[in-house]
Length: 284
Image (cartoon, rainbow, N blue to C red; front, top):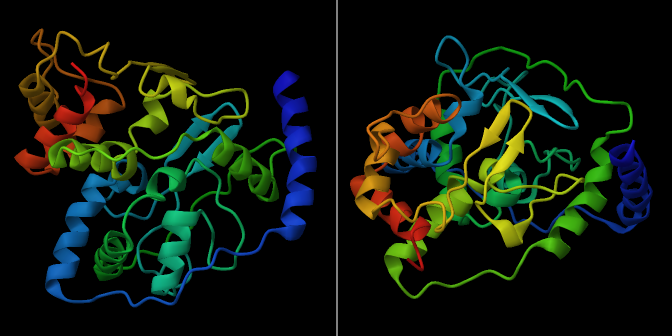
């Protein structure tokens, strides 16, 4: 009941904000189509964790996976270039709007089950390289199910939700060590690890002062990956874990982290895994 009341309040706020809110200012952009851009995009799609959510049973990125949350069930969309059920009609600007601003091509809002707030910090060049790879895929005609949400949850509420999330988010940090800076980019932005590993308040806004401190999800508790929780892990332990899922105690990871290792961190270069490990161990 408390959560519903809070959403009613944010809905009211969203109405007022939405009146004045306009589509973000994003310039037209061209999706590159060269082999180098496509290959770079393939790497970034793995780094961005896209496959873990959007891959179907046949190995295409036509979506359909259910994402459970306290606010209902969301379904991953089709991100193959099918013109009717996927992204086949998207232009470069559409990719920038979606990935960095959480907006659909027609200007409406995505729900934050799509981690656009983490992707907001990726570079335009990386976003367009991701687009290049996705547009090179075989189109698959597959309509993702409609989200199964309570009647009091709507896209227009995201105007107010995003504003509140902006107010809660701390100022960005610049790291002088290039390895840690790269690790932060891969972990916070592309890999969006905080989407699962950071606790959230009643509105679903991350508790940024508890970044990576672990979180309770509908299907169980997600472990902490902050420096305190990883005190007994070396950077090499972490890099190996990100590669094959092996923990220092000799056990292998399971559950929903298993496909993340397989499709995301396990596909990165040794240097990038080592950078993520250095970032997660920062301050130790």
